[in-house]
Image (cartoon, rainbow, N blue to C red; front, side):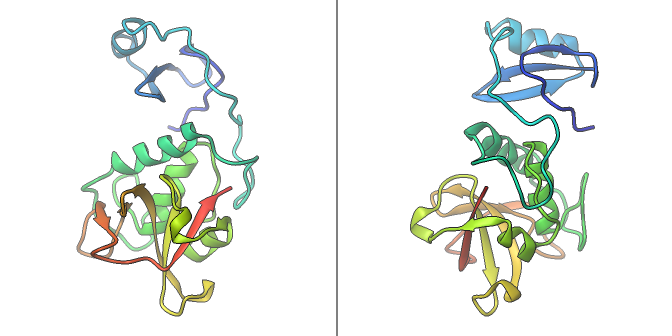
Length: 188
């Protein structure tokens, strides 16, 4: 299930979930006790959510720059899958390849990206390494061009990223010191 946020915390009968704001992110649960514990006890039960699309845009397009909410939601999703196994062509929910994890993470944030890494790069605004910020995408290319792209991950800051690395490995956080990307993009 991937419910669509409709503007405020509380019960959403369309998707059958409760929305609440916690740690600068919006979350949903189908459990009323969890909602009450996190939302009502912290006084955020009436907090308004920033504007968000009700349907994702076509692949490779979004309406403007993703908000901090979107970036953090994508990161939270990817980090919640740490330890899941890598699987070539994996789209989840519990096994992923690199681009499948990135696509699902941004889909959770309401941002549509294409399925494969080179198309994901083309769907971003190219940036330099010096411009990287949390939530940007980092890519590896065998020849420094779009044609050579073979891997993608979500940048976490401080030269760290979350990735679904390769067969035999699990979703993990890694460092530029271990495997250094050579292309960078900002989701638009």
